[in-house]
Image 1: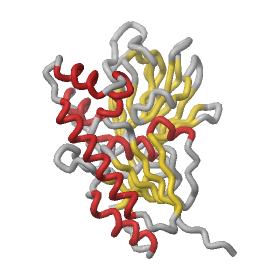
Image 2 (image 1 turned 135 degrees about the horizontal axis):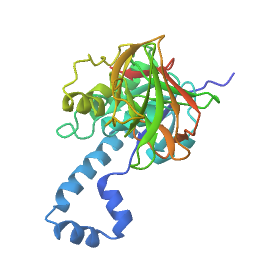
Image 3 (image 1 turned 135 degrees about the vertical axis):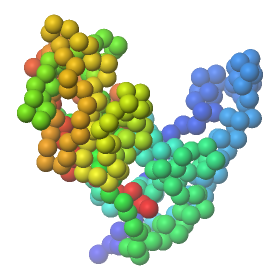
Length: 298
C-alpha cells in the first residue's frame, strides 16, 4: 500500500500591489498613479512584502514529503478540495470566509501576515507559528473551533452556504420584492434585500445594521447554532409592510422567502457575487443553520 501524505492547500488573494500592477503594467506607472493622488507606494509595497514573507514561511514549514497546492480566491469555485486537505489561508479575515463555503470539514489555519493591520479574528496565527501548527495536524493534536454557517436552499434543490452571511435580493440597486414567512407570520415586502447572518458575520455587516437601527435583538455568537436576519430599508406602502424586518432563529427553525421579481433576483454568500444563484418569480428559498461548519484551527 502506498502511504498518502497530507496535502496542504495554501489559499491567497492578490495584494493591492499585484492588482495595481495588473491594471497599470509597470512599477513606474503605479508610482505615478498613487503619488498623483497623494498616496504612498511605500505603504503598498510594505504590505505586499509582508504577504510575500508570510508565504515564504508557510512554504518552508510544509514538510518536504507532504503534498502541496495553491489556490487563489478567484478560482475557489473551481478548485477541487480533497477530504483530508489542510487549508492554510494567508491574508485577511475575509479570505477564510471566502474559502469556508467550499469545504466539508477540512481544518483551516488562518495566517495573519499583517498583525498590526488585520483584526485577526479568523486569521489569529502569526506566520512563524505555522510549522508548529502543521506538526500538530500530523500528530492529531490540532484543536479546532466549529463556526456555524448559514445555508440557503431553493425549491429546485440548488443551495449555497456562507460563513458570515447570505444576501437575498436584486442584483442591482432596484427594490427586491418578495414574501417573507417567519414565526407563523407572513408579509409582502419591498426592500434593498435581506441578509441572514451567523455569529461570525455578527461582527461585520450584521453588526453595522444592528447598530444603525439601534436593534434590541441579541446577535448570535460565532459558535451559536442560530442566525439573525435583517431586512434592509424595507419600504412601507399599500402593497408592502415593515413589521418583519429582523429576528433570530435557531437550528431546526427556518426562514422562508418567495420571490416576486420577474428577473434580477439573486442569492449569494459572503460577498462573492460571481458565485450566485438566480432567484426568480415564484421560487421559494429556505434559510437555516447549515449542517456544515467551519473547522477553524484555534
